[in-house]
Image (cartoon, rainbow, N blue to C red; front, side, top):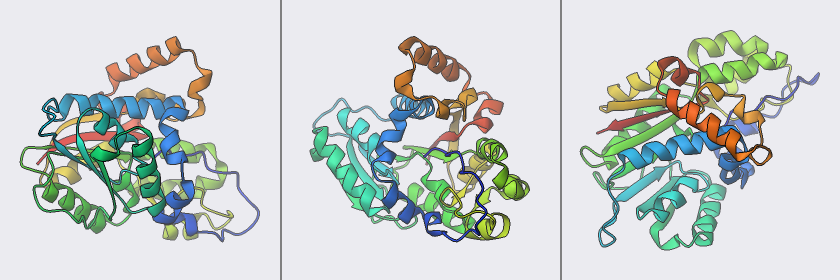
Length: 298
């Protein structure tokens, strides 16, 4: 998911907090969750970076008689599930939003991979799958960020570890705190919440009521925004060993979100993509990105 530029301040009191519920938010977000990864330069960089690491770390899928099984946890509209299925993987997508599950099934059919993609409505904190079921687990685009309680994030990571086979790769991307702080600073109506968000990274109903009561609505759904060292630490605490950290949008964070991909020449996109790819593991760049990707193993 991409951090959207918050709306301008309103003179009315903040009254609509329904969008802070991630399930409600993504039900209403609809097809935009599928479209966003090819709508802007930032979305392109997120998708390109994620799939680059998937190619590097996923198990081989050349044996068509025994395709590796991959869980797409919090997979939304199924963009990554379709990409995986097209490359020979047997995919199970699990998402809490009924609307996103419906879209994922539609997209799997449209791309002729419905036989390889199973979609189930499920909470990543309580996955309905057996232990050691999957050869790889993806939790990309920020599902872990939508769990604002630390205990819920720990429970979700335990579930990802439980369903992954020993030594299998687990891909987790979260939303970065520094990038969202830049967005908040750009919109003066959000300035009262900047110190609190900088300190603990949690944007929820309590935060909105305390710091944004001068706005009509909070502008984004509930999230815990991560610093890169925090992501690495929580993964290690959950029993994973972290093999790679990458800043998916890199130094194009936030800027890339403001450029429609269709308006850019291909050579411009290629040049920026190459430069971001070259520098996305630099620790400063990782921490600055809209989305921070970790590759870990059980």
